[in-house]
Image (cartoon, rainbow, N blue to C red):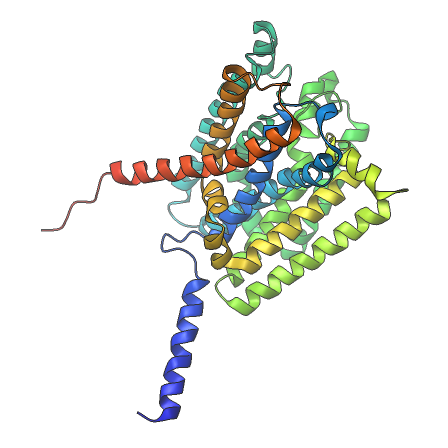
Length: 388
């Protein structure tokens, strides 16, 4: 074999190895999406772990900024990744013969998430609220705080299976304009519509300052943004250069959005970040909070897509957390409210650094639990019969 032929063979082998390193898992999962979702859930766990044990008055200055300012990226990233997953997994199949079955599985998933949301509402409130307050919350007269994003997720899964076929047929121009149009519709309704005097209904649709709820229309722009990005991921993820260009474009959008946040800040930056860390402008969503949260979320998403399958493997605990977000949510809420607060009595009795270390350890414990659960599921799953 000539030296030139050997060099070509080596180059071809290297190319195949790089392609294999950046290709989706054999199951068809895109690990980078799991990793991005895992980043969102990890930030939620850190936020919930510390906030579940301490009041803001017990936080250190360095705990508020940067730690808890950064955790405010979690919700925006989670909702955007939800849209991405819908675009990657379900939109290409909306015209397939088995779409009704897939749609029904999504609807069943909504029921499961709704049941988990109600059970975890009891877990969050049982030690601090009386029976009537818990019943009122279960009946949507009030809302929990730590588990409320599950309520948003459950309701979204009830309508989005019917919306995806519409999205697939929608003209491209209308798709790209849809996040802005949805945001304007949400703002108009918030300012001009009374929702028949039912504030809880307003909270579920466009949010209400007196209720901690994620409004379907208020957060719809993020879902639509995720659907748009997901369509690009589906087209370009399998090729290294287009994927990196996509990540660069998202990073640029992140930089522009964060620059908008800096322009919005009136005065010193630190007080604005302190206010965001304390949830100012989160419900209903205000411009400053959303510029910071969405800008940072897009930056994390760009990192996940640029790193691809390689980064997802290097930081495997985060990827595992993102591979089963519902299980991660159930596990960390039960640990915080039952083990840490009720059994160990850590609520308002520990220092900030200990609470933060405990929350970081909880991230690893969540990953370990999900890995164990997935291993048990694989071991107990019925195997297909061998052909004779």
